[in-house]
Length: 178
Image (cartoon, rainbow, N blue to C red; front, side, top):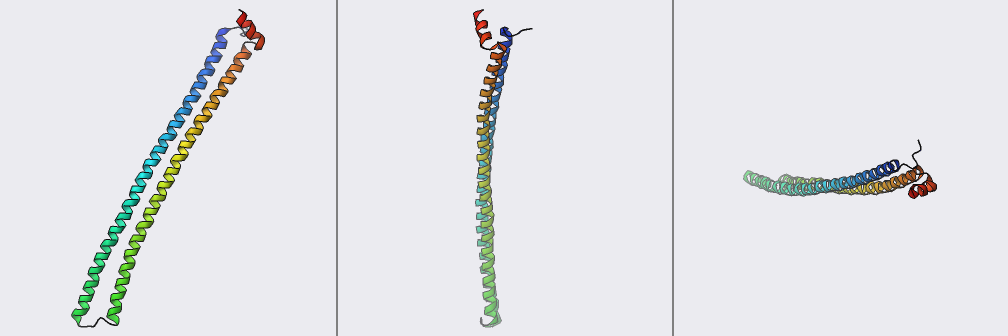
């Protein structure tokens, strides 16, 4: 059966091509929306990581203050014990007081250092999350662009198939003469 002059066959070919192209465009829109959603989630997670970094930093500062208060109390008890014993704060007793002060300060600084390291790691994590969000958004945009190109390709292919189904130039002319 020759379908070159059958308007239903040509119409179905065109309709199928249009629907396919529409579906490709919708897939692209969905990919773009998904990318934007992923970016929003990543940005929210980055904000949470930054807040956690700040909280860890503040906790370290407070722990260092507590360490300093306890250290002052310990040094006070040491001096009181030395004074009560009647020993002069020279030589070994003085060396013990100095060593205690140095150790307490080293502990305080270590608490601050660990807090700074932890906070820096969280801030780094926030940066990675933001970069992942940007990448997701870019992938969504690229997929949307690709879907538009695919839709154009589908329309061109459909047009070519319809043209061929109609018998090329001669068929089109004969079709419209009817």
